[in-house]
Length: 236
View 1 (tube, rainbow, N blue to C red):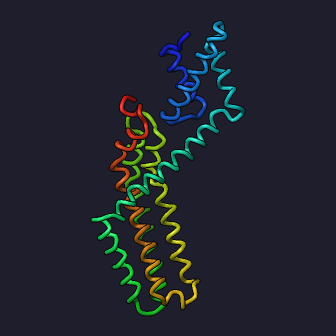
View 2: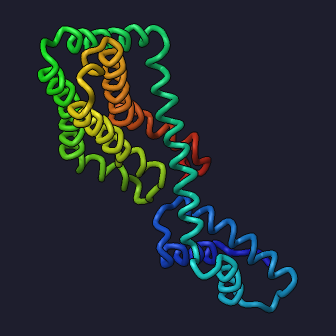
View 3: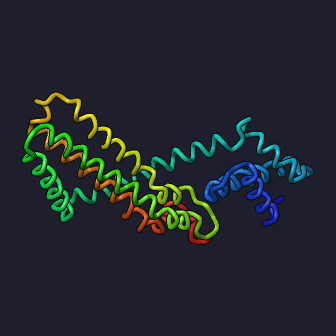
């Protein structure tokens, strides 16, 4: 026996009822359960669809689909970080490398020629603070548009949510802000040093580039990345 389209729709409805919201994961689970039910029918053709479905669901254990959802989130989180790195690396290659080098040189020059350790501490914190303020401001201003993009087409895709949530920006920039705050607790001999100026310039520029990639570059490539990740995306 083979599953009908009505059976397939019931499987999708079943996954949604068990708190699986994303269409890509629903499809993965539906395919898995459909194969399991058809295999079960080969040995037990008198089994009803509902009985076969419950039998397949029991195989997922007491947590149901939660474990599968968590593993999928981790896998796509790893993929998303690799996407960030892919586009970030473009700024380490010519001709963008020249812009990156120029940005580092500008920040380094500002720090190096700042007079007084106390002033340099405030400058370091100020750079990190401005980056965080810009990021939080953009997150607030763009929230409606990003929410619309995440729900576009009536289906939720896990990777699309990661792309438009821009959550990694908050993590990265909070780290830079914490480092900016901790500068005040460093030994003054460490701060009054060209190597400190260079290291902090590299950190700030790296954070700014990551912010740019996450906020603007990756969302502009969203459709391409989704089609690359999900073969069924075009026809869904």
